[in-house]
Image 1 (cartoon, protein in one colour):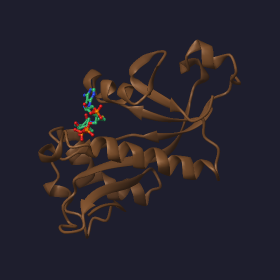
Image 2 (tube, rainbow, N blue to C red):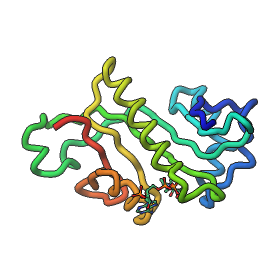
Image 3 (tube, protein in one colour):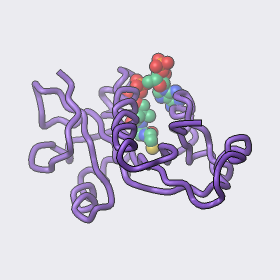
Image 4 (cartoon, rainbow, N blue to C red):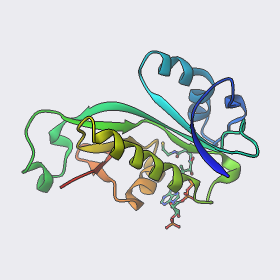
Length: 161
Ligand SMILES: CC(C)(COP(=O)(O)OP(=O)(O)OC[C@H]1O[C@@H](n2cnc3c(N)ncnc32)[C@H](O)[C@@H]1OP(=O)(O)O)[C@@H](O)C(=O)NCCC(=O)NCCS
């Protein structure tokens, strides 16, 4: 059974994780634990309960803000001019052996659900993501994310109108 868990370096074999993008592998293996300790990000992994140490995919979430000028003109009309509170999914990656099996979609859905729950306590306008390239940006656009005005690799998913 697939489980979403908080990343624990003693439990999850981060060094064995390979999504095909070295910088995303290195983040999990070298920086994730210290970033969480410093309050910079939370890291969630997907693992199979039959083999709990193997990371099938992961995402990170942090608090963030976005400049109103980055929001599409139509939406911007209804928004204040100060920076908007949001959540940022700084990283999302699926193990290279498990790509194309719906795990990216599953992780994205879990991240959105987590943000919606957190948003009941602390307001946020959108979930912002940083796509590593144009191809990754297409993945997010597939799910309704909108590119920022000044960057097609930074996208946002508004939670409301
Ligand atoms: C991008 C990534 C997370 C997608 O994960 P995945 O498990 O292979 O994707 P899924 O199997 O869940 O695909 C879900 C849907 O997205 C679509 N999709 C996947 N990659 C896509 C892409 N690059 N562009 C457009 N659509 C894409 C699939 O066709 C599928 O569509 P469907 O639900 O209509 O059938 C994964 O390929 C990955 O880890 N890539 C390397 C790291 C990366 O690019 N991270 C992105 C953020 S920087």
